[in-house]
Image (cartoon, rainbow, N blue to C red):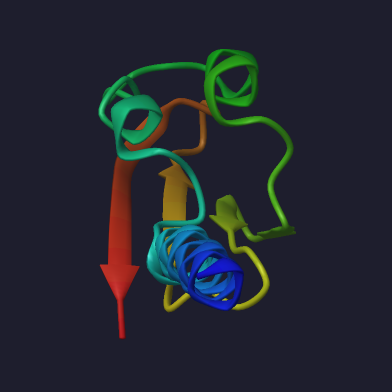
Length: 91
């Protein structure tokens, strides 16, 4: 009987671990609830307050990525450093 209890605990631990790992790995690089807060016309400071520091910055475009995730977030700024658009892309 004790062996079955150990086996059930091990299986439960594995299932919980795999669930957490799957949600972390296959989730977006930033929470979608935060992504939805980014609106056209926001300043760079506003975006940084919501999403944090970008992974890369190049030519008015901020990109947010996270290791082991399948996707990225791009925020494009106009010449006045205001959000032109923000986009979440998966692959």
